[in-house]
Amino acid sequence: MSNLVPSTPKKLRRLAERGLTTVEYAIGLLAAAAVALVLLRIFNDNQFFQTLFDWVIDIFGKVAGGL
Image 1 (spheres, helix red, strand yellow):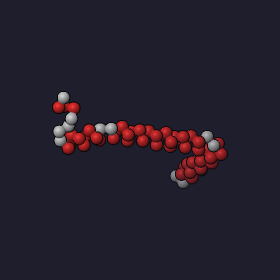
Image 2 (cartoon, helix red, strand yellow):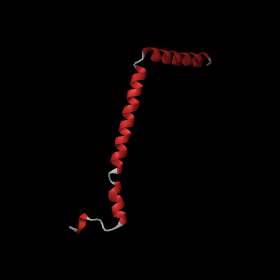
Image 3 (cartoon, one colour):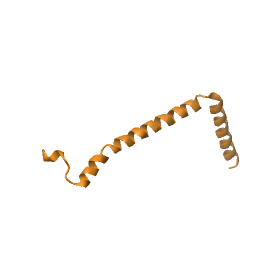
Image 4 (spheres, one colour):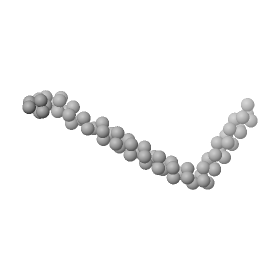
């Protein structure tokens, strides 16, 4: 029964921080999902995607033409 109650402050701190990693992962997953939704919304706009694509192709053309 004495194993259930930590006897030192170091053990108490370790027990208190045990769930912190889980919270950090949860926040990270929520942030990743939010970024994915924003990117999905941006790239579903065909005009934006076409402008970005044309810009990249133009850069490739300038680089290839300069060689």
